[in-house]
Length: 403
Ligand SMILES: NC(=O)c1ccc[n+]([C@@H]2O[C@H](COP(=O)([O-])OP(=O)(O)OC[C@H]3O[C@@H](n4cnc5c(N)ncnc54)[C@H](OP(=O)(O)O)[C@@H]3O)[C@@H](O)[C@H]2O)c1
Image (cartoon, rainbow, N blue to C red; front, side, top):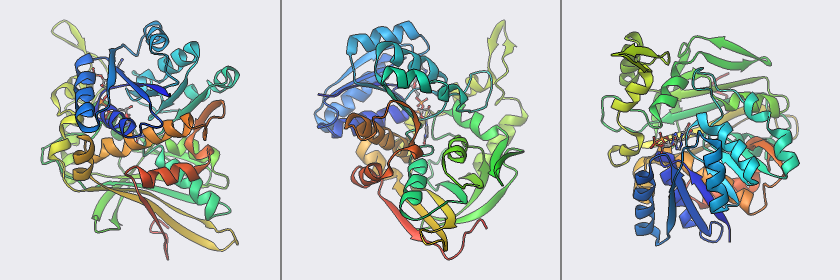
């Protein structure tokens, strides 16, 4: 029986708990731990109601390695699914090494005092995981995660090399609130307000945040949306692991309303991560803002519409002829909520986290070391996306819309 320990009981943690509970053959015994025990208990009660499965809950401070090691030794899981925040990546990796269990996350490490995602800290664990005979899967969400697997799938089945890669993440859903973020507000706003870095002619180029945009028409009636070029962590690992790649960009849609609110918040200093003195206390404005914004897990019942996330890739096909391929998934916010009680942003992250864990536990992805998903065989993961709620489609395009 495979026992797992999920850490983090936010929007994504909820989906991971539900999806793992649905796959009883692989996930025989599920434990859920987070900073706030009551959130774990709420999720466990919902999962019991929907699936009849029991989830055991725990309280843990994932910034504290000895506390984590004690919990892992008590639970004795085969692996830890880290679904808390990027700040905890290294403490949880340390605890997994010390307690001898496999590791998975959905977002790469970012130091709390510097808004800059980079893989260097986690890649530095390669030797230690290899020597311990343990596997760490980095970035098993949608982007990164599924987008990385889409690239590996395209390279395996369609291209001899991929030269340009554009990841397009459109959220065409609406929650009807003046301003809210679809996942952790602090992480989300740090990501969006950071300078853009994209990969061009074989090196990274930095431009001001949100300075490049265009309209993109999604398939499946999802509509035309304004998308903005921004930095996203998988660009770093894809540039390293996809042979022949010379240009890689990440685009995300934002509504005018969202951008207007963000601009005002930035202008008045509310998105700053520099602590300020407030009535004798040190307060980080962005953390205060997070406390007053709607919680991502509360958006589920209000969000309508679809997400459409995928990769547009160009390069020589297996015969050397030029080809452009679009691989994508369309996910309904309402269907995600009906199934798991969470909106599609949490759903599209939580399903691939479950599938990554399934790959590891079933021994399909069990090579010791630290891996980004594009380094692994995409076929079983692609098959499971179709089975577990994120069906994908692919079409050859006449022209690359970003050319
Ligand atoms: N790859 C992708 O496609 C993708 C997409 C979206 C999100 N993500 C990532 O998914 C992760 C979860 O996002 P989310 O929207 O679910 O965030 P969230 O709703 O804020 O949930 C985060 C959870 O982590 C818990 N937590 C935070 N610090 C902790 C600590 N020190 N010890 C124990 N638990 C702690 C929180 O506890 P409290 O409730 O007590 O605060 C909360 O339950 C984030 O890392 C995010 O970057 C990845």
